[in-house]
Amino acid sequence: MNRLLAPILCLLVCAGAVGIFWDAPPIAVSLGALIGGALGLLAWLFWDDWRATLLIDWLRRLQNAPDDTPLPPPRLSGVWRMTAERLTRLLRQQRQQGKRFSRRLEDIRDALHASPNGVIMLNGAGRIRWLNRSACRHFGLDEARDIAQTVTHLLRDPIFVAYYTQRDFSHGITLNSPFSTLGRPLHLTVHIYPYGKRSLLILSQDTTAIERNEAMRRDFVANVSHELRTPLTVLAGFIETLQTLPLAESERDDYLARMARHAARMQNLVGDLLLLSRLEASPPPGFEQWTPIRTLLAACVAEAQALAAVAAKASGAAQHVIVFPPEAELDAEIAGSADELQSAFINLANNAIRYTPPGGRIEIRWTPTPEGGAAFAVQDNGPGIAPEHLPRLTERFYRVDSGRSSESGGTGLGLSIVKHVLQRHDARLKIHSTPGAGACFTVVFPADRICRI
Ligand SMILES: Nc1ncnc2c1ncn2[C@@H]1O[C@H](COP(=O)(O)OP(=O)(O)OP(=O)(O)O)[C@@H](O)[C@H]1O
Ligand SMILES: [Mg+2]
Image (cartoon, rainbow, N blue to C red; front, side):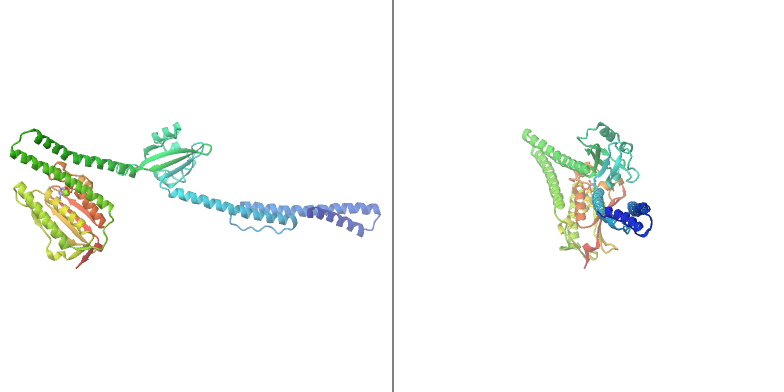
């Protein structure tokens, strides 16, 4: 309404002014009023156009300015002021909505970056639209460099290329990451999912640990079955012989003694397996129970001497020389499970006696460490262990010489039990050995587990 009134008013005022103030013949006055009115209208149109230009200028600056720049609207009146106000409000709303959207988008992007699974989004032409950090880690891609690249130019594994080009995405594939090495394997499961019109989503998952656990489980079952099968087969053979052949009493006794040995071996195996699963399932021992080192080493001494005596009797050779630390050096207490620690110490001492030929020298030491902890060590002068075996000694069922070890009744679980017990007591096992010159197994306890008395 205002926009119609203003030019009419302008026209009338100019025409009226000419009519009132120009003293001339009526025809000239009418013509003058007409021209005055037209000029007034023209002036108004110019003024109106100038205000429209101001508004458009402001809008243009607003469009090019960064989001947060405060750009107040030009000082206008009438319909232009209302338009400017409406536009300001609309813009503010749009900016707020835009910010909300980009915050949400950033949130989703951050969550996808945090995912351990790789995510790659492809457009209809097979070019990378977006990818997360795990995908970069899995496939050796670069977040900034590889956007808009064709995926098959970057992921060149023939298994992936065949999967991608055949377009049968009902199943996933497994492949090795380009970073996979023998020492540090990286196995991936990759699945492509179509979405939208022609877009594709590639998901990759690191399955190395799952595959390793599965292989370990398979190995473990195979090992346990193998370890049990051998004595069981021998036992079955002896039973059959005893049942079918008329044997002399001495032969029978010999067979029964052998059967008892194999039964004991199976018993040891089952006992060790149960102990291992108990160690895995129970919470680590705390600091409530403190045991004098003297008590633990006394039990170790007794066991070692008994085993050395049995070994000497069986071989008919000289007994091992076992050297123990002087009593005075054992003035400390240790926190943890006395039973577990004792079994670990005895295990190490027994190994030294078992794998060192009769007459050999075994030294057991207890020494404080500079950090305030203490070290328990068993040193022998036996055949030693070749360096390639050292990293695998604490694996379940691992034996350097399986023939010799099982001959002596070993299950190959001793050191893996020791490792578990030590881990539960925050201790470390260090193994040093020079083939031909013996081995030294050292257990280092941290300061908070040791108390000097
Ligand atoms: N002091 C040592 N000297 C030489 N070899 C050793 C010594 N201690 C351990 N080994 C080697 O490490 C292997 C693993 O030892 P571990 O104690 O785990 O099993 P084991 O002695 O065969 O059986 P277990 O202790 O369960 O009865 C042994 O088979 C042996 O070959
Ligand atoms: Mg052993």
